[in-house]
Image (cartoon, rainbow, N blue to C red; front, side):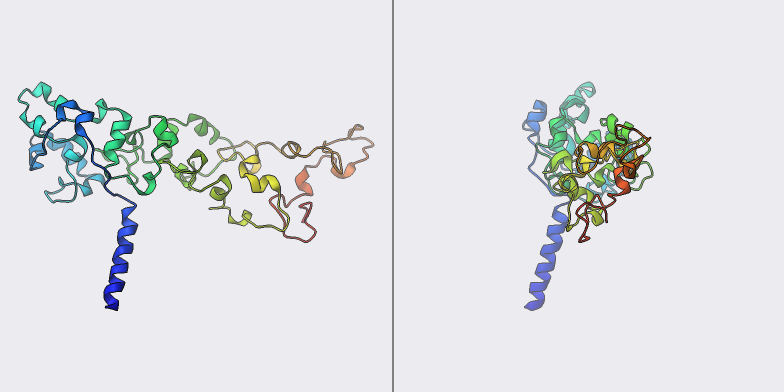
Length: 315
């Protein structure tokens, strides 16, 4: 009895884990996508597609996508051509070859929303859970803008490019330009990708972040900055992007501005002048301790301090 209960729990856990990857969603109303398919029936055999589309199917069979379809070596592995192109009875019945294309669904002739609806028959959960209402859906982006369907172009993630960031740079050209600056995230070096911080399929967080906030996303890698600290720097706790331009900067540590100018966006003349020089400039300066120095020369613990005397982030 105990073994049966354990086995049931394990089976349930496995099903729950895999349910998030590829799970069937609601079926498509093909008649709305193409009126010619209204009332059309499915074909009983996939072999009829091979009669005309053998070359394309051979190419498709080499993709990871094909593992879930019935066309690979004649084995029943999941879905068929009709899963994406609609029921084939009208297509097969049409004797005029020039009219056959009008009796099926081609991704080239339908809207982005309709293409996504077809893909979401299977890809409705997991990473695509928050696709509805996401920035990309609202911008009329379709799945095949970033993912290949019929031809193998990359070894992973069905990306239309071997280097996945190139898919993002199709639209986000401003980010591509900023990545060319001297201080940048290691995308160019292949150590991370856009998806390290963003979920392109939708997110409850701003900017499609993988975590609930900017800071929580940064802490995935920069855990030493998380805290809590005895003395916390308010702008740091609020948002890392207050000081850092994460897509690229010409200043060290991807800072938005070079210190002390960055610090001066918040700190005015308090306790000591915030300017590099006082009114007497370099000669006879009454504040030689700050002459030619940046704030970080003294206030080195700007991300926070656990030192009992660290109220000014000097130790």
